Length: 186
Image (cartoon, rainbow, N blue to C red; front, side, top):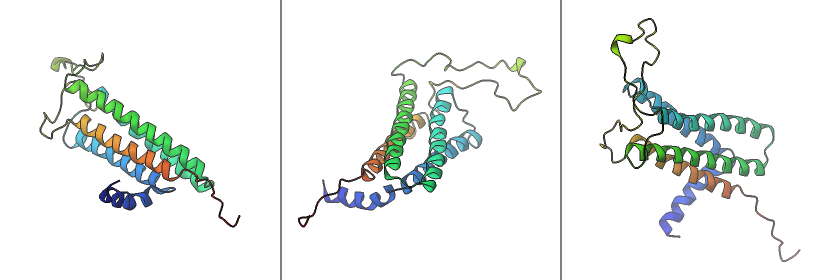
């Protein structure tokens, strides 16, 4: 291990102990959901079906983490936190797989799943009584950033999810109950 890496881990490790990592993971998931909704509301980038699938992972993290933090307040069991951090790592890893799949569809590495191609909106058939309802969905094959930021939004989401997954697994390792060693006097 290089000294720089060791120093970085010494700074990060206190964040990963007990309830701190799930609280940070909750904040990260809420931030990602907020960013996605801001892109939808402010930048008017409508989400495709795969974008919505990526959000489901973060909603699952929010629900799981709120439940885990409530249970932690009732009974503070280190094994529970170990199991929860492993589960959290697996959920973030699932999010990374979904996001990487979506990025692959955008980069045309593989075909889009059925139902992910743009629905053509017939302007003459729009329901004017309910304009709040979506009249069509964008295609999963379109990169809304058009390659301006090195990766697509799904590509960046995959990297963020991989990072959050790695931190969750690191937190599980830190919270792993250490076997008690006997002193020479025993």
